[in-house]
Image (cartoon, rainbow, N blue to C red; front, side):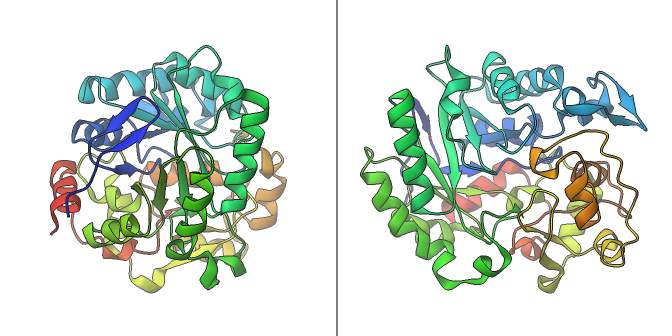
Length: 363
């Protein structure tokens, strides 16, 4: 089976594979630029850009961490990351993933548009006012992430009424994805919420709004998984964790090794200051947090609104900005390492070119 290209707004993605946006620092210029270069859709994570190039672009540091939202979501760093990714992929489509739950969402979306991004992907909340922030950039395609047909319907109704537009594509994320889930713990385990059972109702809803392309995400690992999703009605897939196992992935070598060394039972759902469970690898940090012996919580970066300036972090026992950035810097003692449920299948590092070839042509 040869895959059809994926259309998102005015952009054509030659191979219908979207690389998941992974922060802090897992998918920046090198990974995203190379995925787009090889015909997929490279996605830059806008999370924690203040850490880029050894915090060179963070306006102010406290305890060697970017201060507040202006530092953590550095505009200058985002511009630099997009520019460097462009140098790799040329005029091929390039996307940014900007979480709805972040503080300064509006500013970061506008920064990405100004920096010349083609597509903006937003999850972690229902982005009912997303089009408001891209006014003046009619070519920027908008792609929300949902976990149900109900969520898609709500977004479409709101966008249609307020902005006279609908999403250019939608990413449907099931509970096998890495990082934050759109479900509670209990819902993550329910049969009806598994990706293969969510596709049909979401594709049906999408068809009512002009056949919005549906991109399936969460647990997609190889060519046969992609074929299965396409057979169920998806127009493309999004894959995050598998791309960590590439030379070009911007993550620290230690982070890659954590996944390569992980066993199936090491990948678990854990509580997060964002209010939803997150999926990652059980490590030294998770053991410390369980014993309430995790690192001190200072809320230097003020990263996400649901955390309420560190209040939720204190509830769950860790600061998500600090711990994800520790993972980015390769700190095995206090890093938080997100992974999809299939992360244990990573066994070696290969090039993005080789991975894209395997996904399209089989192993």
